[in-house]
Image 1 (cartoon, rainbow, N blue to C red):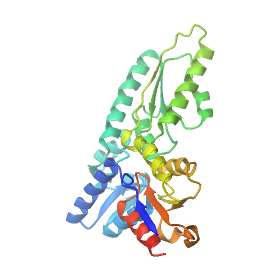
Image 2 (cartoon, rainbow, N blue to C red):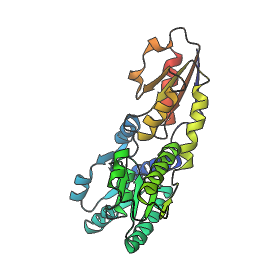
Image 3 (cartoon, one colour):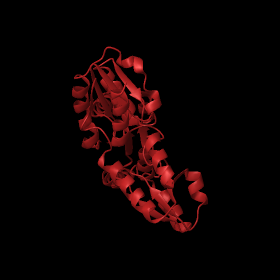
Length: 290
């Protein structure tokens, strides 16, 4: 049986950087706190935990003093930095540069909207770590657009600035922009409204959509390796399953079902931006031996 690993699957730059920083620190110290899962992949978190990384919640973070804490690629709100200063916590900041740039843009936009009575909208997943960090730039006053119903919270007679979580889909953002424009036209009969949509989706992530769809169409069976907590992973999985119905989600080796490969000659293995290469290689090796 021929098993091929997708060359473009695996960690994005931001995750690679955060893990490199964590491993360098753990080489010098036997223990390091990490504020939240360093990546939404249970197997990679377990690997780093065995090296001495301890994942903590924000509640636990507030109780710490005089220690080091890693900030993952998703970024953090200003409140986290304030607590660190008060509690003498040394932050090892592994925030993705793209996320940090977006935080600054949203903060500036929020200050602008306060001056003219406008609103900042964030297209993203409610409760997602990156979205929480973006919200913090607006004193938690921005409106998160996760579902269509969330648009009911928006005042379409006031100026609007829209941004997106970096890992959302381009098609999803385009749809939200269209919905907002339709509402604006309904509320403003003279078609005179102040709306700016900012495409802040990371292209390293979004470009994988096309690449994975092409990859999925080349094999009889596709094994998609991803943690179930990964919003990027679940989006890509659903997308590729529409191309190839024999598309199976695997989070760890134990999830593999030998029945999937009966009479199959060609298998493709791919993953999300939160999926480590070593795990895809391990999964591929197991399939090859079936």
